[in-house]
Amino acid sequence: MRVRNFTRNLLLITLGGIALCASADEPIPPFKSPAISPGDPRSGYEDAGFRTDTRQIANTGGISLGPFALGQDPPLGLPILPADRQPEPGAIELGRKLFFDRRLSANATLSCAMCHVPEQGFAQNELKTPVGIEGRFVHRNAPSLYNVAYLPVLFHDGREQHLEQQIWSPLLAGNEMGNKSRGGVLERLRGLDDYAREFRAAFSEEISEVTLGRALASYQRTLLSADSAFDRWYFGGDTKAVSTAAKRGFKVFVASGCADCHQLDVGHAPFTDDDFHDTGIGHRAALGRDDVPRTMQIAPGVIIEIDTTLSVPYIADEGRMAVTGDPEDRWRYRTPSLRNVAITGPYMHDGSIASLEGVVDFYAAGGAPHAGLDTLIRPLDLSADEKRDLVAFLTSLTGSNVAALAADARLAPIGDTHGSP
Image (cartoon, rainbow, N blue to C red):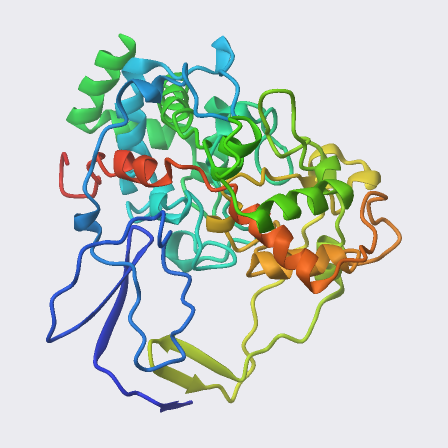
């Protein structure tokens, strides 16, 4: 392999899922709000003069959301959480700390927040699919955690129904957090003085499968995000809240049948039917394709030419069928909500589409046709202007509090292997 176009002395590292980029001779400016820059999408790196907008993690600060975190007064566009989905107030801070603690992984290197990065929409903008423990390949995109409290089914294939149980899937996955057993995770936490004390304070109980699940679920149930420009227009009656293009785009959205899957309700809008659909993405991936790169960019201005075969390992992914065993469910995946969609890419269950424009083009073309394609998906006769308007509408769905949620997240200490944080 040969290295070419090495034109700047830059250092690129990743800390807790946040890309840091700095030259040796100039100070690092303050972090930009995620409302402006929700992470580093790595676009522009082909230009040797490019500087990423994502900066030092220490400069993000930490500001509490206060009473809003109880979920009893959700932002405009969302319903009040049912009583059985309300976070436990005394467990929110503990759950936030656990969410950022790398000691939950088998070798104390990976936390929940490293795949669900607050500044990147509680998803991961930088990669199609996350990198698991010891660099292992994870074959599905990291879904955003915004409004996860409302979901009746979890994961792309719907294999769990409750946040309290959901946590064990990534904790025990050999290519994610790599733990061998539930007991091993619990024993590790019981050996940390800070957690033994904090679990007793939150639950008047010791650390257990149940209390660990309750703590992490309580924090995730505070991640309610809405009050978008669309909400202020559609539900709030503010005619000036969105652009004319976004209003036209909403008409296209409804007329084209997008709202059949990404549904609205009376007084609020989940933008999902919580059902499973085959868009053709899974089928297309199963067919295989020649995507072996001949060049690879490994840092800003650093490109290597590859003279050997390099490919991502293929893992058969049958979608919902892996859960139900029903062949009718092959390549069906859960409909994601469109809230905050502009800041939670890349898209589809495998992260295979990088931009909203690409998603619109995919559906306008009728998805990826094959025998099992969902009957709701069909070619759409959209003009270039209609596509732009549709993207304008989707962009209007970004909640007003994404920066506040990221700031609240950064109140958490980040645990490591050096004793109590």
